[in-house]
Length: 84
Image (cartoon, rainbow, N blue to C red; front, side, top):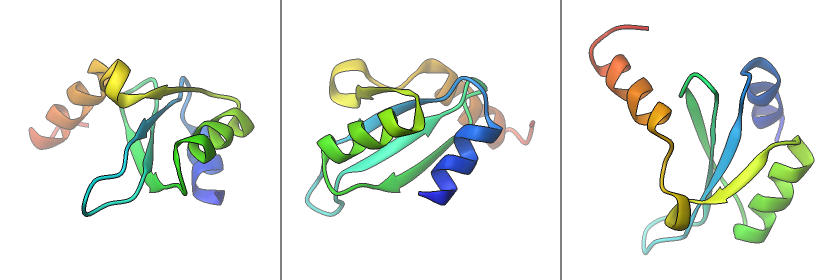
């Protein structure tokens, strides 16, 4: 929780994206900053993820319904190319 609070406080424009569990991972939440930088953490379930996002004062989305934001893909590509 401290990591997520610090990330939201230091990165403007954050939104949360809830990822459903798979056979090998439990439910996770990605917080994506306005820049596209992101962090991922496990959450007990989707409802807990939505509550956590609300507590952090950010919007939350179900990634199966909304997909990932394009700024996240752009940021990942820039990191691969060595640009920051």
